[in-house]
Each structure stands twice: as C-alpha cells, then as structure tokens.
Length: 166
Image (cartoon, rainbow, N blue to C red; front, side, top):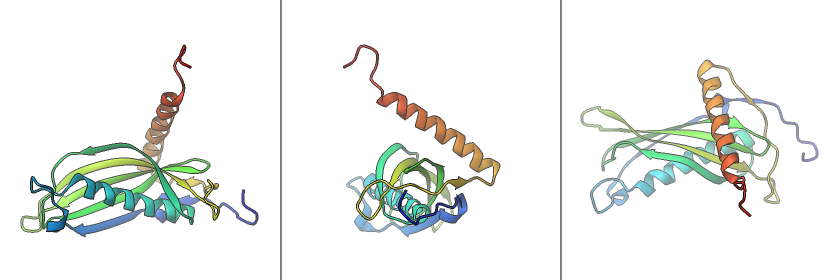
C-alpha cells in the first residue's frame, strides 16, 4: 500500500453515476441507428467515472465481461446510462452499466444494453494500486455483489490452463 494512504470503505452510491446524452446524426451507422461503438464508448466512459470516483485515482479498462444490445437507438433519442460498482477486489473492480433509450416524442423508454466492465486502479507511476473496500447497504447491492463474485470466479477458471495444456 502507498505510504500515508488510508483505505476507508465507500458505499455503492458514493461512486454511482447517471449519464445522459442526446443522440445526434453524427452518431449513426449506415443502417440509420446509433452505431454500437458510440454506445460502447458511453458505457466505458460511465464505468470509468464510477471506477475513478471509488479509487480516487486513474483507472483503466481491463475487460468488458459482457455487453448485450437489446434494442436499437435512433437519432434524437435520449440515452441514459446508470453505472455502479458491483464488486471491489484488491486493485480491480467490476462496474455494471445499464443503458436505456428514450423516445422524446412518445416517452417510450427501452432497455437498450447492459454491460459488466472490470477496471484497475492506477497509482501515479501507472501501477495497480489498492482500492477502498466496498460497503454494501441494500439487498440488491448484496445480490449484485454475489453475482459479480460468480463472474469473477468464472473468469479466473477461464484463465487457468486445462489439464494437458501447456
């Protein structure tokens, strides 16, 4: 641990963010929908803000565990991203991001995408640094934490070589 740094726990809500952006013509692909890469960038940005708020340092995206697109987004729609921590390890953390799109003319709100991202906190030299522990306050936060632990264990098993592999 860095000299003089005390790691007091933080709650999920202390670092959670809601980011909203109006989709414009520059965001569309040739099919006329908002390009998936635009949504991916917004997801990564929202997740990175959550990570940086919790770590109070720079963070880098280590992985996107899962990204599912459910419905398309169109020009003129409002995209809202809700991002919060699910799990905090020693130097890495999982952030869940839920994306909704809203048709401003009809008021229809659709679940557009969901993603889980892993971020690593960095110190001033760009090396992984310890993170404050995560304080879980609600049943929903506890559930999301358990699910994130299961995903983390699955990822760890995937990284291990299979018997007989070199």
